[in-house]
Image 1: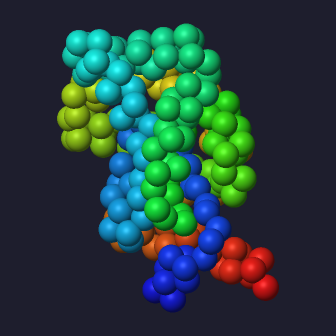
Image 2: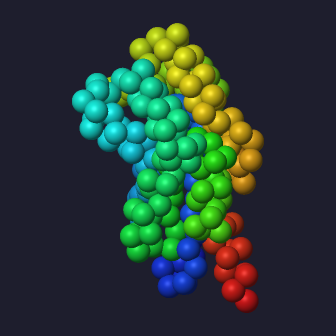
Image 3: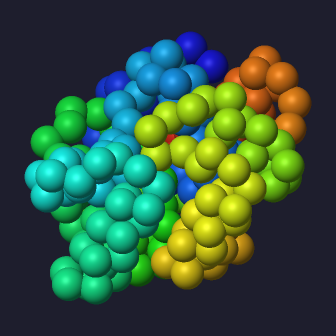
Length: 200
């Protein structure tokens, strides 16, 4: 793994790996693992949170859901991806993770700029996800099953389910942190080996 990581830092090619999944599936955990490995991460949800703060709104599931839908309604379904692209281009790294893909429109927008784009879907059962969100207790996390259900509906309405269905990799996150790290490492090894092989 270390040899491959070293090689990635010297190749001229650039790959983006976009993560997707329903709330509580483990995207934030994957993000932290990726950061520890030394890869930069662009968090798409930060764009929505920044916009909500700019409007003077409280960071709640309802306000973020409303802002998310309004941004896409006014600026187009790939609006959040378009906002992220300039930041990605300013990053000096050959592998960049994009956290929080929510629609195929976003996927296509990224692919226009970065042809080598992969989708990594993180999956966990609704019961597991609900428990995690309650324990996490972030400002925009649901406080009960009704809020959890409504948040899932908003995510699916935007197109998360379609992105999950088109994923290049499915990472089931129902076990331990160590198991998740091992699964992610195997995916990274496979991708980097394929790039290396294509270089001849």
